[in-house]
Length: 406
Image 1: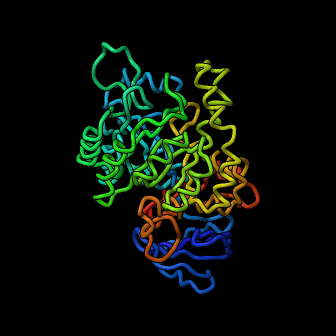
Image 2 (image 1 turned 90 degrees about the vertical axis):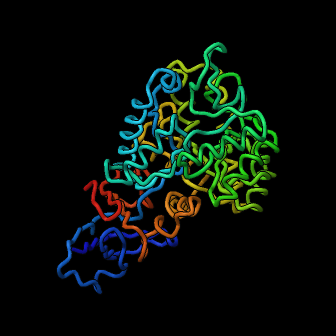
């Protein structure tokens, strides 16, 4: 039986317009048609009445980590939990994302390919969850953001990273990651906030190392993504052929111009640093980490305004799973985008739908409500154009034509 969704206010994400009294006709897991309710024949259809709601495409979070859920101990836990423990955690956190309206997520790095196991189980119908686009194990350097910084006499993997220190090793790590089913390659182009002993502004890879890594996904039609705060590391990644820059909190205007020239996407993840600054001191995070987060966040809003003015392609991502940034609650990023980057509401919504789908090369199936696309639809009790905070309270979730909430 076909389904018809009657929408009060309707945002397709094809453009920035909000329409009213629209009907979405769904056949199986795909959208058959979109048009005025007055012209829709609902005979022999299951009618879903959302005439008092704001209806839009399923949300996409382009940067999160399903194996963590904001715990202060999340990095230490990687040295204590089994792969089985973390796979179950990943599954439960992904399900929380779905209930918050995220019908698609991009996992930006996991441990032991737990993200791939969960993605495959969802795709096979063994468990419920959002559509997942995954990274497998990220690639970094000795002493860098994904190195474990554990006792030097402890061997083996203790954090979510493959550590390389040469072009050949980088090339092998990328091939290894794709061999076991990753959708993309994730690299740590600079130091980070919560890793001890490195600096967010410092580059990790040489150009030769970065180019060797990225030649692998680029030659196979895959995308790539770089954790990168500092300007030099961002520029190395762009020159080497990266698809998206994650965070980008210490970039300069040359970075922005290069991103426009190369068509590089930016995923700002404002909430990741904001949560550490807001919650870190009172909860006992190291002063070094809180200080790094403050430096990263200081000019992020001004830089995002410049990026918007220059035409950088900006996505929506939250780094959900990192400190005090829980799955299902990461929608706070919408409000932060309007505050820090002065994003209009329509730009926020398009970033979290159409632009993210284009980033992942999934624009032919998700990201907008159009005929032929997968039936991913979410709804809210108010319009975010009137109150952006309503994005924290998703009241209806449909993925692939199946209603999971509401």
